[in-house]
Amino acid sequence: MLTKEQIFTIDNEEDFNAMALESFHYQAHHTPVYQQYLSLLHADISSISHYTQIPFLPIQFFKTQEVLASGSSPHVTFSSSGTTGMINSKHPVADISWYEESFRLAFHQFYGDVKDMAILALLPSYLEREGSSLIYMVDDLIKSSQQPESNYFLYNHDELYTSLLTLRDKGTKTILIGVTYALLDFIERYHLDFPDLIVMETGGMKGKRKEMVREELHNALKKGFGVSAIHSEYGMTELLSQGYSHGEGVFQTPPWMKILFRDTNDPLTLLDSKKTGAINVIDLANYYSCSFIATQDLGKLYPDGSFEVLGRFDNADIRGCNLLVQ
Image 1 (cartoon, one colour):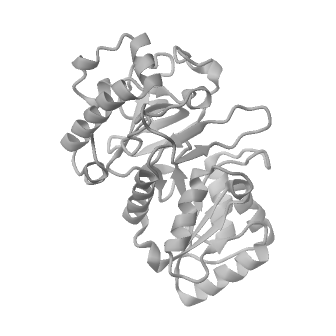
Image 2: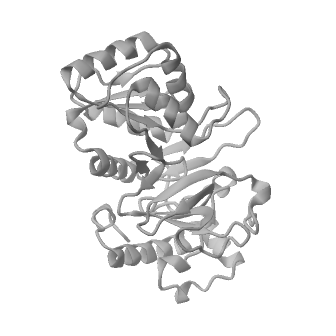
Image 3: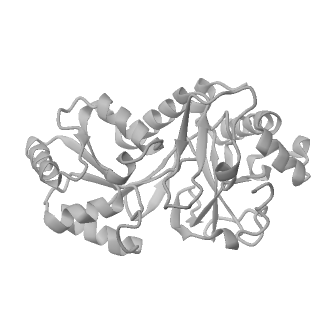
């Protein structure tokens, strides 16, 4: 079995491949739904020698099955948001310390020591429900910050505006993490000139506003906050790792996470870089679940491993990925 130390100290392609293969063999034998999926695909497990050959589990299984290694019991269960009548994804997490180490190390890699920055969170729709993995992460970041202004702001925009002005005047490194519609609501009432502020949008209008293309959205936010770029987080309920964008919607991942692209009409075929396709994620932090997830996101991969997210497609557009989904 792999350890957290092995996963979170990966620093080259050879190590990543070795850890991915070891994770694959563990999950192929110990995660029942993945084991059954591989059986229905008639996958020859013993012949797989590189992570690009590993079959990816369609993300819809998290809506209908318990994706968890046998012999494990959930320490916590994360759930996705959704409108009334929708089936939400559930992600039982056997060992929460894997998630904690994953997001702490990745955040430090992309943004530095959280103790030295203020973390402000404008996440009303996430706070108003239970089971959000994003809230679990932001809670930890706020508690780890040593800045007194670090806090949640539900609908109290006046208080958020005052805190932002205070932090700007103090010269404190500040990150504002917000759901998209709430950030737009804020800049409709207030205008800031805070060039050093890091604004990180987590995506989603949550049915509150009309969807906007990324360029239009980011231009509005840049103007409203007086910043030159809008950062983003790429994460989801079914994963225990996140990618981050420092602007222009181009994401990077930590060393234990990798993005591959598949053909939307042939889900078992991977695409070369510079082509548009559906996003497959390898998340080695997801050891006691499944590390190989075929998402419903569309995007574009670049040669250096960075990627863009261009949108989503419906279940009806997924070819050959409905095995076991009941």
